[in-house]
Length: 185
Image: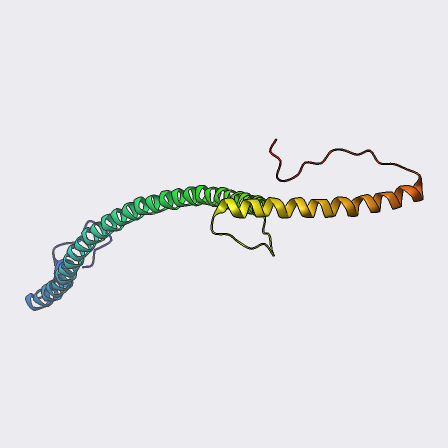
């Protein structure tokens, strides 16, 4: 629409501008309706996307809750395992100490057994070339006789050796009386 420059224009100038026809208005309204339909479709799509997004958020929250629960459970189990490992390490240290103590005891007992065995062997003398008798008393008397005879042989040998040495050095050793095996003190 055109407007005049002054206020003196009459209604005749109105006819100079062309009014849109019904058909033009109808076409314009149809275009607007098409655009509105597209906007409605877009809004429906947005509503669907919004619903899907809400569902996705709910599912994500559920999954996050499950993950947090699993993390909590895993942390608890890990803590339990760590406590058990610490307990086993402590037990292992105690066992190591016990094993060390037992090994020391074993060595001590072995040394003591060797000592006792050597003492036993020293106390159990073995005599050869003496005939055994049927009774222990006869064997004992034969053994005493044998020892006295051997002792006499040793005294004679010792006297001759000491006399020889003393004559060489001019020294006379002091004599102590010997006990014989047959004597009981």
